[in-house]
Image (cartoon, rainbow, N blue to C red):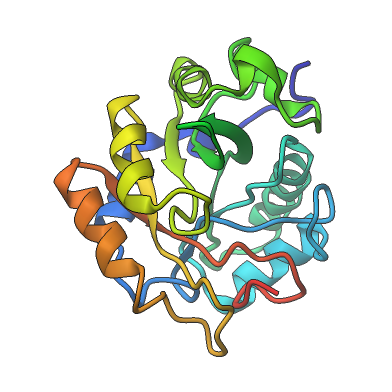
Length: 229
């Protein structure tokens, strides 16, 4: 399965993505950057165009739509954002390709975020079929390798939400050459959104220890990009 939309080079610009990640702090999300959100194309409540409109209204510098096992939300948002670029002179946020994939790490189901990949690459295309991977394809090592083969970066999502602790999962993911961990994440859906004071220091320390990028995201499933639900 291949994408149905020509993907701009900016959507796969890893240099710009790494520059954005290098600048992140605990206050960067949700008003400057947001690398984790879902549209109606998977299990979110916002349409892709509504996501773009909110991203522009908030003044985001960059973002990624990370629907589960489908690229349709990104495709619709990219098309809409491209039309906006033709109609306005104001700065618009940078949109990267993104997806969230279920995988197995240490016999535990985890979610792996992929960014900046080429969606037409044969290695990652099988993960766009809206189905949870099974068998060998579900192994975290296989998923990470597929993301890298497609030119993207792999990040362990919300590492303190799983059956096994982040102190076990992050080193295991790092041993498989994962690129980053979602350090700035709000586990209890606080209002206003703020990264977890309990988990962020632990995840960030492990990320630094294993030389991983620290990323941020609201994991929006509701009607506001500034909240999870």
